[in-house]
Image (tube, rainbow, N blue to C red; front, side, top):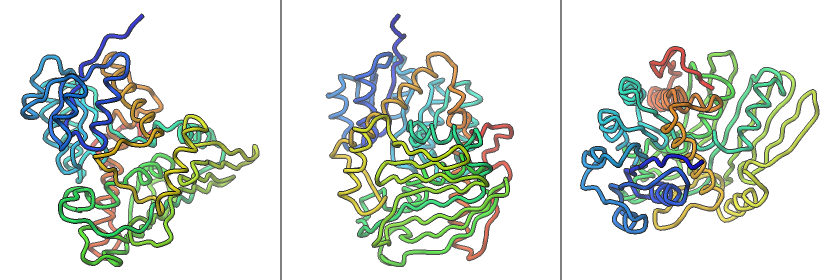
Length: 373
């Protein structure tokens, strides 16, 4: 039995938005209805055989658009989400969903009050290997997680003002734009309660974002963590490690491998769906220096990323169609993943400015009872 098609509109046809349009057009149960915004909007509309909307307001007013994907620059997410919710359209919003916790809470409240499905685009949470790792940790494979560490570093020259992804005013800087590792630490360790940050524009003082960020995190559950982010590191790394009371977990993003060790023994498996995708990911990192990656809207994402983006769209479309959301991804739908990570990132940047630790609110999402899963 074929699934009812969901008509989807895209806001922002850049690196991710254009690829989402392709994946929607090639997938069962979804139909690309309209697009708006971004340097590739007209070409995406022609390629996908859909309408080119004149504005966000026009797009969400189209009866054939039942849901939207917001993939515009980070600082422009709020308006299309609010307009979509007011029009009764379901919403998928790329990470970070906003650059302040207050804006996130407003956007999520609007979707909740309108009764529409909201899903945050935290793509690591749909990666098969990482989902498998989280299941093992939640089942007690390493005992109680007590120490977490993540690094996403590399060396990159500063951008021109036109490159929004490297402009803090538009992207939020490295910590917001590459928020995945912070989100994953929170998923494993729990919400951040306090954070201290050191760093700044150390390697590229003329740049538009801090290129060295060193974070010390305290988690509400009693654990602690550290993070290194930025484009001022000649010896780039991309990894995440969690130590528990009975074992440890290591994610080597550069080699697309995960290692888990505990009382039951040690196992190693890939991050992606299969070995071909793991090789594809590892080959990409061989051409880079560490984990500082900014997508080029003139190019397509690599194959391993396209597979994950298609999976995100399938999950979102099914939730929009049925009103049911998958339990393992509850935090993407109730908003707690988006809000907790943005609140922690905001507190981290405030700590950098203050030169002192900054507390994160007990319920930064304004979503008491959210899953946090």
